[in-house]
Amino acid sequence: MQTIKEYFPTIQNYTYFNTPGIGLISKDVYEYRKNRYEELFQTGSEMMMNNAVVFSEVREKIAEVYHANPAYISLHPAFSFGFNAILEGLKPGLKILLLKDDYPSINFAVEARDFKISYAEINENMEENIAEKFLEERPEVFIFSQVQYLNGIKIDFSFVNQLKKEYPDTLFIADGTQYLGTEAFDFNNSGIDILGASAYKWLGAGLGNGFFMFKPEVEEILQPKNLGFGSTLGKYKEEGNTLIGKFEGSHLDPANIGSIKTALNFQQKIGIAKIENKVKSLSKLAQTAFQDLGLLENTVIRRSQHSSIFNLKAGQQIFEKLEENAVLCSQRGEGIRVGLHYYNTEKDLEKLLKLLKS
Image (cartoon, rainbow, N blue to C red; front, top):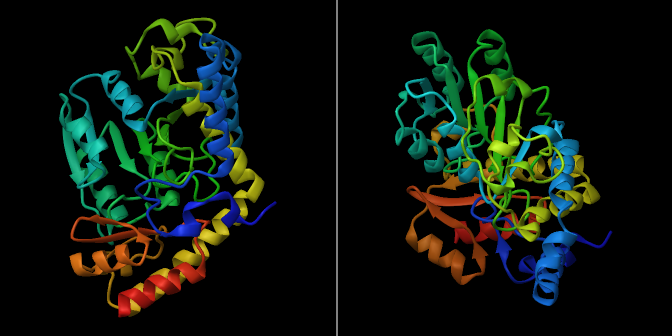
């Protein structure tokens, strides 16, 4: 395989720490999309006909990588499309536990509906806060991000699995948008009942695609209503009245959705274990360096594990200095958010640290 740098023109021109905002697409994904749109340009409807099989292939690839059932994987233009359809399929009045200040696409969507909502605080004791809320509120649904978009706090998956064993009747719904693509994950053996993600961040699939994985038993709880012409089209939906068919009423774009398979193939080509080791190694180096500079909040410092997203205590002047030196990141909350992925290097981190110190 060629060096990683050859697959990502962006990192030849920038030092890229903005994967939590939008991940880089590889040349493989770029070529796949370019070919589909050239096909659409040249052949019109033939493009859709020639690529109809891609949707089942994408389900099968997701199922292979994340150990799920392809017949229970729905495809969407983004996480929010599927998530709102799920909420519409839940009975009004359910007791739902959220994390306070979790991603707006989660909390805003739940708060806009007729549910009884309680919140657990996101801090160094997040898991204990969640456990207390389960004892107090006995929620019927627990919805959370696996990794927090603001500061990178990562929920303890062993805690989630144990909590599900203790409360088997509670529906666990997770957003993996800031997580999937950073390490190996086994959905079937997790405590999560429904897991969704937009694929344009850490998976590197480009804009306009996302998916949800379901455990089969959720069919007893969900009554989705997102029906339409596409509900019975294609493999895994031929019989009609399938769960995923009730989430896929409209046409899907083969270029956008097919990019998920291409992106996952690319990560497999590199090696998912190698990606995981690289991300964890860089994250550990970064956390130590950021902590030594006094740039991390105590909530992050006090936790035993963390993701590769950090919110640095730095203001506008530092942000402008980073931009001037072709370092791409985002301002989030009161700080500067950076994220390290497998296409980052220790040299990238050294450049960032040098600018932060100057």
